[in-house]
Length: 463
Ligand SMILES: Cc1cc2nc3c(=O)[nH]c(=O)nc-3n(C[C@H](O)[C@H](O)[C@H](O)COP(=O)(O)OP(=O)(O)OC[C@H]3O[C@@H](n4cnc5c(N)ncnc54)[C@H](O)[C@@H]3O)c2cc1C
Image 1 (spheres, rainbow, N blue to C red):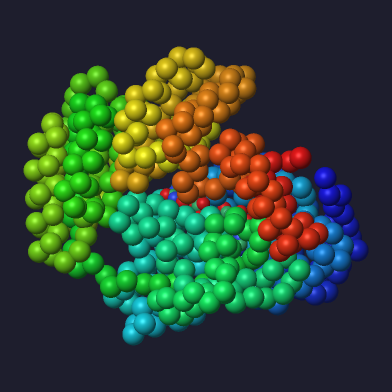
Image 2 (cartoon, rainbow, N blue to C red):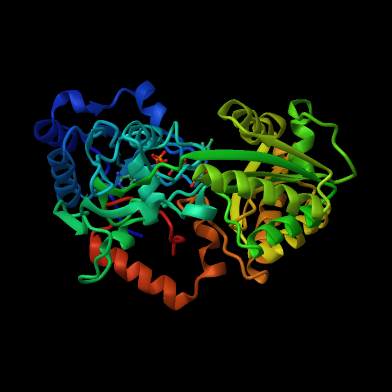
């Protein structure tokens, strides 16, 4: 274990001199605002620094190496794995002050942004320019584009458009020792040297602090239509997903909710819930108008052939918003319902989704937990919300979580599809990665950050 220095008055003074008095937060009640993220894990920072320029970040990292205190980058604080929390103490670095959309290049379909821009504003700016930035993480009104890049955020649109990574052509980052690097290209392709862009993307703020991003944009789809299909059970719903995809249709979203989630939002549904374990699919298609009309009609027919008992179409933005409100409300209601709640975002092969969801009652009974499953049926990403009403049974809930992750791996899946490892899942890393793989990754971390001052204590389990 590395010994870090506490952030002493002398260090604070050095930071004040380099970065400025008004960039520093050290009042205890203000520090508490940065002690948690959406994971609800708690670690109080010793100091918070609000960067206003790349130079501020460089100066801070230089001081961190001289005095050996940890620095943890924080964007919107919407992460679900505790990645932006100072688990080994030190300074939390806010990137929200670097929040300019620097340029939009219509001819080349490129947008340049600073890391602190709220993700939704990136989408809106592209839209206002008649272009399209596809990644749509559900928390995009809270998260920053820098945080999305650091976690390689996904969302419903992944099934057709991929994750944040697929829209980052290049970036600039301050390395842990304070040097600034520029990676990647401004073009659609480029293979010069190792792909440092893709090493930094998804590295959860452990290899560098992203200070600028060059994003790839697409032409805006002319039309979008949606639908909600209701099935008697999950097997029927997943058979429908397989049929849609094997017939060559690629919706821009295929989300599912299991029967337990549906029970929480029953009054929002425009139909009575059928059967014992009903399940719904929310499907969206986008593209040229004529193609969308043809695709939605074809998907409707497929759903009916696959035993959908209700198919509700949403032709305009208002009707689509009502369908998505159901999906969004589920997360909130799970939070309200459960006294203790563990959020996992596993991915399994499409053919294994129904098997995994059908196995949940066994684990619920074995560990005295309730598991609510919803997520991205089109790419196998299942949000498992593992809950108990008895906070004293946290240990049992965690055992159940581990067992469910083991099942995921037996089904050839992965333990995190988009939320990242952070602190929350570091204990499970060796379940999926070999010792050699973890050692190599620790070596990469040391190469970037020999003094382990940038976001230490994340991803890798403590030795
Ligand atoms: C309601 C809700 C819905 C969500 N839905 C989704 C979803 O659909 N898909 C999904 O993928 N996630 C989702 N999330 C999780 C979260 O929004 C994402 O992980 C998001 O990318 C985090 O961005 P942030 O700016 O809030 O980052 P933070 O939480 O502040 O930080 C996350 C990680 O990124 C690092 N980081 C932040 N900024 C930088 C930077 N400039 N340079 C280097 N590292 C940096 C931090 O150190 C930390 O490790 C959801 C969260 C909530 C609360």
